[in-house]
Length: 496
Image 1 (cartoon, rainbow, N blue to C red):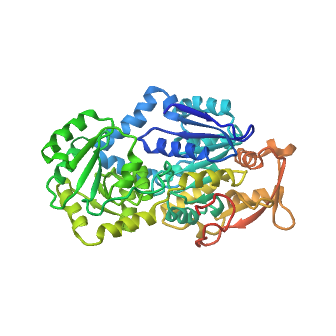
Image 2 (image 1 turned 90 degrees about the vertical axis):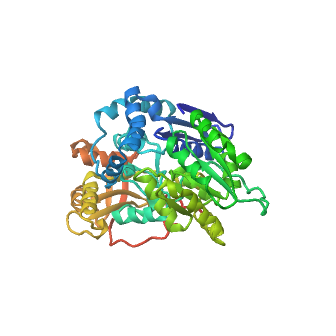
Image 3 (image 1 turned 120 degrees about the horizontal axis):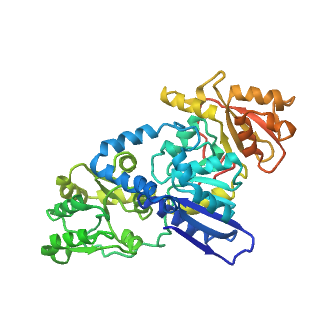
């Protein structure tokens, strides 16, 4: 997906939405496509464009990030697991983006300047980090959202400036609020997926359960072993095996299941996945973020196999907590495990009910509404505040419990009521000396003294003020963490 654009005649002067993704796997681009589809349902969106940032970067950069990742997944999965844990620390990366990434981001910056978006949605951490830099430098004034595509929040998606942060589940929202982020900037609508069929097709209850086996485009030997084990199952069933664009894999599986007659249906790439998800009774495959989200929206429980260390293992853990999945740690037990689910009275039905409860089919529309209808000014997390959050995390301390100079404080837009900055208490003292009011608030001004400020203060004020020269804010000191129910503050709106 290099770049796609769609115009609508709904309004001559509406929102111009740019969706930035990165094709590391298919999930980030699928989420981007889902948000693009959601744009078509809004009368206030005049134009939408989708850009895969890796497709406009250098061949070497693209190969190292995309192909290099899957080489490590196959050959050194322990390294992927280690890297995931290391990069999961909040604000571990506080400085500007590295020179190599900056060089490869030039085409993306040019695209932003040409398109002149009023809103930008990032479904991968690479463009999210770039957009934070652009907001702080004043290169763009567009409302910017960061959208996560796995059920466990990953620290790389946390940047120093954004308008809205959208997570897959409520636990991630609670975690970020404990770090000090304000509730009006974080919501948990789910992972954006394509619109689902309105109703599942009627199934003949006399028919055996249908398995949907996702072999994947690069499934290889593991996918073959999964299918082979289902041949030994004792329970009656039918199976549809989807091999993607891997023709060699499809031929291998075709030959393997040929003796079973019409029990198996083997497909290559197909556009029928939404319908297949609705017709199936049990999904067998990897717990990628988009696959999981689509299955849950369809009320389809999962048998989890061969998860990638890090995000996919954590996705699986969440489904196990919800009762919507079982996991197979060895291909030798897959047939037995599925048999156990099918043979226990009522178990499959309980798992299907759990999947329905977990599903969030309207996530794409909720993300778009949360951004477009949310605060117009960005939230800026100062580098000092980022350092506080990282240090507290490394010491296993809740950042909102801190006191003293390193304690966290928030600046609230007095007129709009939205949080515009997260600072250290020590930084606040400097601002109060220059901009303090008698009631303990601040009146931030661009003014003639703007250039005399330290660089960090200039970045902060430039992003917060936007095109204004003056802004009144009130100060809110971070309190010990408590859960704030969704819907009690302005900003990103939770799903209804």
